[in-house]
Image (cartoon, rainbow, N blue to C red; front, side):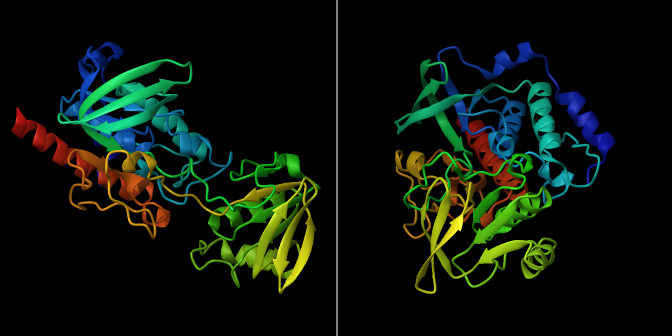
Length: 356
């Protein structure tokens, strides 16, 4: 394992001033590599592209590490700090597992120290395959449009922007959310959680500790097998003692501003609810991939990838992190997504050097 001193030396050797970032740009909006997504995986790809001397740019429709920004406010990662590190920069934390705030501080500071060429709040609206590579059209949050061309593209868009919708009446109400933030405002209020995975369990326990009246709804017979081993006993004990109500073998039929209606054992049951968190999972969208002809499997929307390079069936189009995994989101985490980025960039840099 690389020591903190060695990582610090790497950081010092690779730090650049903001003016150096001009070397990554081409004023005619043509690049060697466009990276879509400025999460940890996209940032790792950007660092490697810059160090290899490629003309690159990163686009993200949100902020740097936008998915982490939208995590629960007081979340602590399941994984340890060194597994989240990018570019050889040490992630220093107060305990072995970083908090959401520590991770956001880290990725922001690494981006600044590396002077990465990133355009945040700028969405790739259109992507086309061309004889020379790819053509993109982007739109910023201020309404500025831009046309970009690139020889190769690495898509690292993740999945957190795409919740699995229930498709039921009331899902679009203001008191329904697919993202959990924090518990304080739900003290002494009826809160319903749809789902029984680790995120749903974390939310349920957090709400319970802050005085909310929590009800969980799950279509399965019990909590999921994938539930983190250190979460399961606490949650099961709270359910057993009646502190948290759990309805299994139940399906949500509708949501209103006052209640959630479920079907259980052939009967309709109405549950008082002032706020509903539908934490039923997320998926990586295949919309951008389909626009350039990436083949995806209909059963899970996952793409056909070369696992040595993470290049798709479309030459020059690389899918890194969970971007190519459709609904198989449990297969990819930050740590193995970073491996995707390194393998993809090794292939891109090799091909670029051969072409020169």
